[in-house]
Amino acid sequence: MKIAKFQLENFRNHSHTVIACTDCANVFLGNNGAGKTNIVEGLAYLCVTKSFYAVNDLTALKVGESSFRISGELISDSGNEFSVQISYDGEAGEKRYLLNGKTTQKLSSIIGKFPIVILSPEYSGITFGSPTDRRKFLDFIISQASARYLEDVLEYRRILRQRNRILLDGKSSNGSVTHLLEPWSEGLIEYGSRVVQRRAEFVRDFEPYLSRAYEAIAGEFEKPNSKYLSAVASERLSDADGLRMEYRRLLEESKHEERRVGATLVGPHRDDLLFTLDRMELRRFGSQGQHRTFLIAMKIAEFEFLRALCGETPILILDDVFSELDGQRSGKLIETVSSMGQYFITTTDDRVFPQEFFTEAGNKHVVVKSGSIIREQAAA
Amino acid sequence: MAYTAESIEQLAEQFAQLPGIGRKTAHRLALFVLKMSREEVDRFAHALVNVKEKVRYCSVCSNITEHDPCSICSNPKRDRVMICVVQEPHDVIAIERTNDFKGLFHVLGGALSPLDGVGPEDLRIKELLQRASQSEIEEIILALNPNVEGEATTLYLSKLLKPLGVKVTRIARGLPVGSDLEYADQATLSRALEGRVAV
Image (cartoon, rainbow over the protein chains, first blue to last red):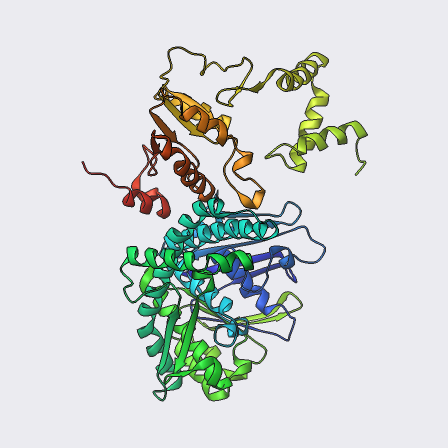
């Protein structure tokens, strides 16, 4: 997948910005607050209908405006052209996605069509932060690779919210809620066990990609590993019936506790991912540098994984990653991504690039200031 | 927002309450009403009031009707051993259009959804159980929406209906007829694969 060009209208601090892209490196340079990240955030909107920063779409509106629009032209690896547009109307709170001029009924059906991999300080939570960050990471990759998974996750979340409401309402009353919970528990087990199974399979399949990427970034010193932690997941992953039985048993077991707490306590929404380096838990024992290297390796692995599974080269975004890396690792990262198709980089300092970088064919240098492009230069 | 007359604003306000009507459309409709003749407006207003005055719920199946019991429940040609359970009156219309179902209906009035405050007591479930325990009933067909709320309601009802000794079935999920396989969305296609039948 490649982006030929795209434009932002009333998006963040951009009134009207048009970006013509090259096939290799597109580097956006500017001071803090200039609007570099907003440009790549717009790309995320085009590819997956949402931002990797904003919690809600309203915050992405330019101050004083009532709607924003992002449009672009994408070209698949096989040469098919797509014209896409996403617009958000702040007053109606409505988001609209047009694919080749036709309105898309379900926004979720777009996810996976235009695979994208984003590396941003925003994602440091994957190795540092809470299980929520890691579950988001899992869901985002697997959703891009499998529409069925995304469907299952969305249904699961809906059932979970319905079921939790019964438990929460039941907390204040003393009556039995068992008969009310039962029909939702069935759905919870059905969808939940599929989500668990798919995630555990993913973590297994992702392993070789992660090892290879880590080796490329850090050298051979350490061996990375990841493990899916779930109360439900059993050793026999392919055994769907066994998984459902175990799920049912655990749900039954937590019956009293969930009444007391007022929330469902078993399922993929409580699972986690454990990362280790040479069998040492990364979250507890990893140095700052190891965390960063691990995250970059994960993202490169994500890129290769999606390319293999979707049969389409993902668009790669490196948002402000060099500020946290030393010169040597920055150089290694640039070298690695140079062979990965089209990519977008935002940075406050272009000295991390080798001198000849911007004279190489296909690389482009764009200077951003106060929501506008003030200079751009592409190598012939 | 007093750009126009106050009555226009009030009418637009009313239109805007209708499902699928936004602010702009509501204004356009209000201005259209202004252009209509007095007779047309009277007929329109009358039709609105009539709906409220004449239409009621069938005491048997809870479908909307002007005569109680409704035309389906009182039709002697309908097959009285089968009841098809649906969520809303418009689902009855959809199934009736097929001309393939000759049995009776039961309109629940929604599906279980704790988030929206809809529990079993808010649906016409007691009435359904009463009807299902009548001796002539042989089969109850559950035709609820194929979403998580519809699924949960289907499970809830089947649990209550099965002990009554009646056959409980649900409508199949799968591909729309006349469509191309390659254009089917993946979730529907996977479910259709799961629900495959021997030929």
